[in-house]
Image 1 (cartoon, one colour):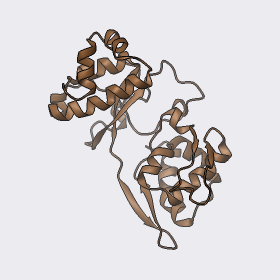
Image 2 (cartoon, helix red, strand yellow):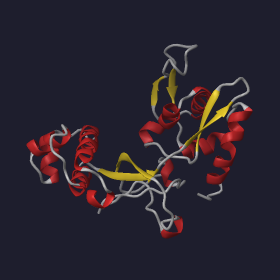
Image 3 (cartoon, helix red, strand yellow):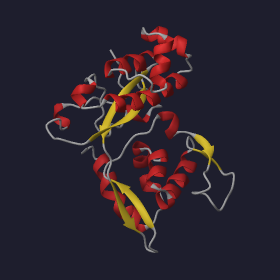
Image 4 (cartoon, helix red, strand yellow):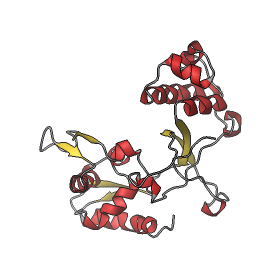
Length: 237
């Protein structure tokens, strides 16, 4: 069986409601969450692995080829496997796997799931995120999602050099998201100055809820995010 990093959708979570979904990529499979993994203690949006066929999902073969080429190569490289190694583990040949990765051949969804599982990953579907624009006191545009989302653990707790488009006043600033104080300051900056892509790259839902009482952000940002944070903190999503 494929290990699930996030909890499966239950009937009580709203399977009866039609909701837009998007393929968001592959997640590293884990055998058991630990206390170091924020997803172990705070469930957010419904997420589940699927074994539906591409036909059932209405995915065209050319679209499947483009999707799978990126996913399979990414999973293989993150697992630090050669094409020969992954092909052997997945029960296919290296030329076939190479054709999948280059988009020359379109695998079935079942094949994609099998190769990803061999590399230690699972395919995830998650509800689409819709964004709203909020004007700040000085006319600056801020972005707010309609739901919180999770980042991979390595991404949520990354160490990196701050991108210049966010930290333009100080070059070569190092950011360590494992340090809560640095994470608070970085979240403040991203919420104030960041684009949709920046928020999706750096803001983890669970860690945002933990940081929220201690963040110093403009009133417009706090007012726009407050009901969303309260909703998830109360376990109502």
